[in-house]
Length: 338
Image 1 (tube, rainbow, N blue to C red):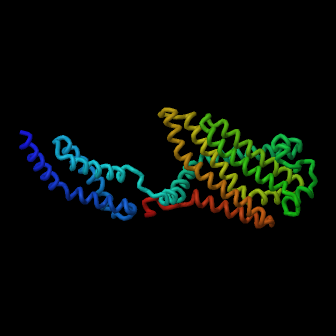
Image 2: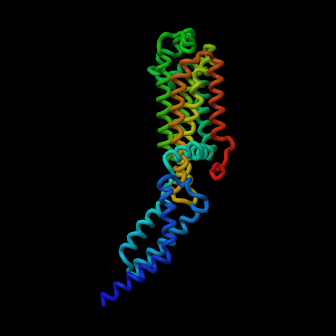
Image 3: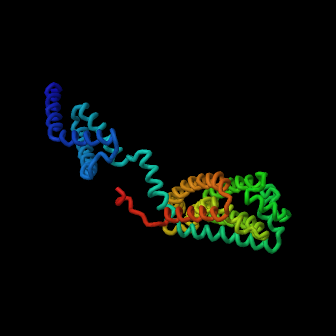
């Protein structure tokens, strides 16, 4: 009985394969082309055909298993189905495609979607700067409450106007203000990371960090402005500060996005709301790292090489316009960019 069953099963397997092998061969050819290059090798019609052929192959695999067809055919269909699965449901983009997609679509879209939180974060930082500047103007001793003595490095209310001016126009042979710039960059980077990481705590730590960061900058600017150096310190800070402070503001916006979702989840569970808000916030935060790197280059080279205040403001204005156009300017949709 076994002897007659095996030839019959083999005949069924051959007939089954003959009826469907054209589709399997086509699917295999398409997958070979993708695996040797990229999805761009396929036409639109071929891309649409792959899911159809994949489902057909899965159906054939199910029939082959249920009717106990030969094991070789089952193994072939399992391998082909697995390959097609990764095409249909897996990540097909190359590393280069992912990087380009991040800078071209993902990052600017995430930042643009955080515009409300960005305005709130900027307002909190501006509030801290204005309050600290006003307090230092009224009573210079307030400077020490916002700028630690080791950070100021002698650039405090007790310093002479000429000493402060020398640190801005390049005539100071010391590197005190350079140390301050490096410290301020490190400080801003730490604030950015903490503002994002602590956003889940109902926005409170993030808001406090934004106010504190603004107060530090505001107090330092107020000191120089009180000596008639407000324009000069503005150019010195903004040549890299436009990028650096904007990065901190965006980090604060990302933290506020998550914190607001936790505080007011709506119809969702708090955990689900936080995860949903965290996706675009994390993308925006990934770009913040890039902005801080660019700010570091501007601080390390641009501020050192450019000593003219007008040129410093011009560079600051250009960077501001570039970021504004990049994040908020009109752009083609992903489907139109192909």
